[in-house]
Length: 80
View 1: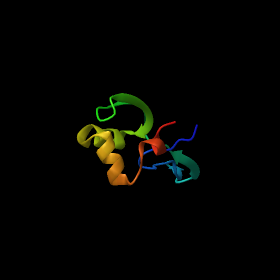
View 2 (view 1 turned 90 degrees about the vertical axis):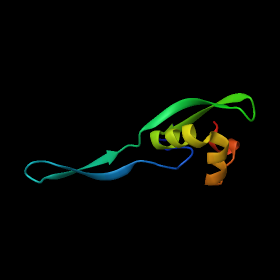
View 3 (view 1 turned 90 degrees about the horizontal axis):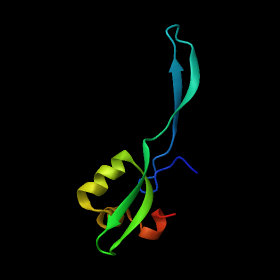
């Protein structure tokens, strides 16, 4: 299971842990992914989508189908 948002494409970023002595070790910044069931009133059904918290806020605001259209995606692209 990839740690990647199906809608926005957000994935892990790499960086450094920096201690008090400024010693640097590599770490990963993981996106805040949530698996949610989203109801689509246009199709009268629910779909399960793995998306970031930012994408979830956008979908709540404008609706899933209009947000996918704005991103240039279809429903088949984001569902498992």
